[in-house]
Image (cartoon, rainbow, N blue to C red; front, side, top):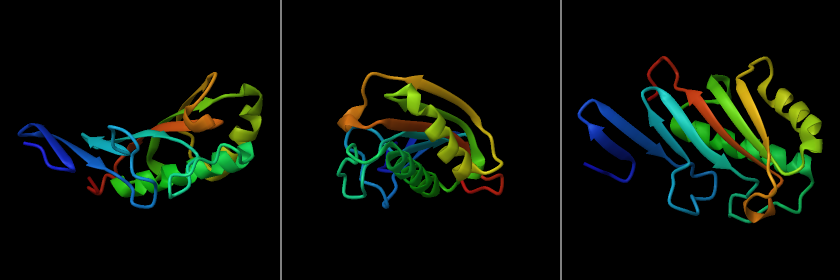
Length: 144
């Protein structure tokens, strides 16, 4: 049984899909977030304005803040937030910009320190300089 927002794999095993209305709708065959067994899996977020315009010509720091803002929107759509992040994977096209990313990211997260990986890549979609994919726990209070 499939609906626009839920895919049932068995009677007790449901995958809930969520898309943020504050972020451009997915531009391909994916959802912003898939929630399963109390864990939200967020698709890679790029520096795109809410209307879908790429921000690849913006300075690196602006792109990072935009991606983190889009990530916040996706987490909210799933019913969780950055304080529940379990792991984050960051893709950057220039590893020399890693210290700037890390400073912005640390300020954004505060004292929370989820697991993290970074991958230097040769290019990203729309010419972006950064992309972030994340995994977050759902609130134990039952937001899922």
